[in-house]
Length: 340
Image (cartoon, rainbow, N blue to C red; front, side):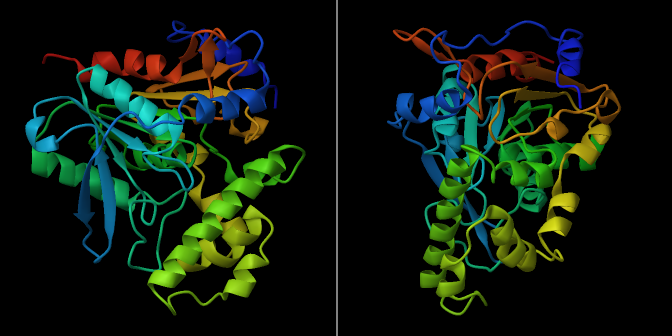
C-alpha cells in the first residue's frame, strides 16, 4: 500500500494542529518511550469506583473527580491499551488534561486491568465491545445525558472503532478519537516479531503473563493452561492462540485477529470520529492505513510522519509538549462544549 496516499486525505479535513516532533528526537522508538520518562509520576489522584456487570464480573473506573459532584459536566471516557491502566502515561496525562478542560474524565479499565483480578475466565480482547457498550449505557442511565466522547488508545482504540462502527447512529457517543490502533491485527502481530519491535512484544507478553499469573493465584483452577505452559509462550500470537482465542470463543489466533479487527467496521461509523496514526509507528504496518472506501463520511483521518506508538512528543528538549493532550481536547471541544 502507498503510505504517502493518506497524507492527501489528511489535507482534506481538519488540517490544523499538525504534529512536529522534538527535532533531536524523531526516532520512532524514542517517541514511543519518551512519555514513560516524562510522565513517570501520576500527578492526578483518581476517584475509584467499581462497576458490577450483569454477568457477575466487574470493571474498575478511575474518575478525574467525584462523578457525583460533576454530573453536569461534559464527559470523556478513556479506553486504555493492552494491559494498560490509569497509570499508563497516555491515560493519566490525558485524564489531567480533560479535567483542566472542565470535563469529567474516566478511565474504564478492561476486565482484570484494574485494582484486582476479575472474577471470571473471560477478560478482554481487541474486538470485545460488550463491556464498553454496557458502561456507556450505565453512564447515561446513572448520571444523566450530557455531551459524551470516548478516546481509545492502541487496543482500546480498536475496541472503540469496533463499537462505533457496529452501532452506527445508535452509538451513545457524540464523538470519538482513536489513537495508534491496530485496525488490522494479524499483520500488526507479525510486525512485533521483527527487528526492534520484538522488544515491545517481549514487554507486552511479560505483562500478559503477569496478569494471568495474578489471576491464577486469585482463582486456582480457572485456567486449563499450566504455569509451565504459560512460561513457554514466546510470541504474542502464541498467547492469543492458546489463551485469548480459547477463552473468548474464537477458533485460534487467526480467527481472532480477523474477526476482531476494526478496519472492516469503519464504514459503519456515523458519529464524528478522529483517527490518528503515525507512519513510523513500530507496532504498525501499512495495512492499518485505511483506504478511502474504508472510511465513512463521519471519520477524519490524520496520518503524521512521526510520532511512534502513542508517543507524539513535540516542543523542545527544554520544554517537551505532549501533543495528544492538546490535539484531542482541541478536536473534541466542538462536540463536548456545545451549548444546545
